[in-house]
Image (cartoon, rainbow, N blue to C red; front, side):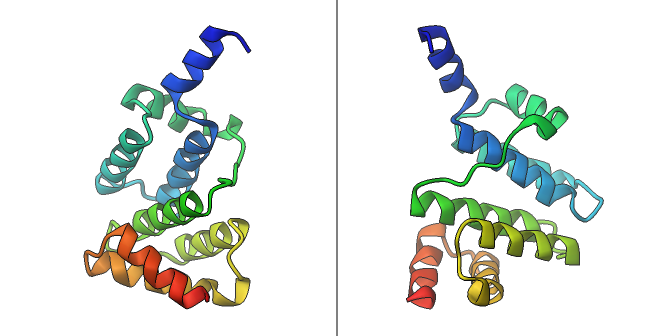
Length: 145
C-alpha cells in the first residue's frame, strides 16, 4: 500500500466505519421508509467517524460492495450496536424487521444470543431516557456479567 492509498483510507474512514455506515443504512431502510430524521442521525454518526457527507452518499448508493466487518475493539462493537439501536428507534417507530436486524447485529458482534433481546431493550430504554452511550455501556456490562 502506497502513501496515497493510506491517505485515501484516512479520508474515507476506516473499513469498520464504512461497514458501520452500511449497517446503519440497512437499519434505516429495514422498515421500507428512510425518514429524514434517520438520515440526519446517519450524517451525525458519519461525521463522528470522519466520513464526509459526499462519501456517505457514495456508501448509500453503493453499499452492496462494502463487506460486513466486526470491530475488534469491545468498546467499538458496543458503540456500533448502540448506534444501530438508536437508528432503529429514532423515528419513534420500531418495526419488526428493524428489531430482527438489531438482534442479528448483536449476535454477529458476539453478544450472547440468550441475552440479546434484553440487551437491545436496555439500550433502547437508555436512549429513550436520554442517557449517554457511556452510561448505557456501564449498564450493559452489568447485564452481561
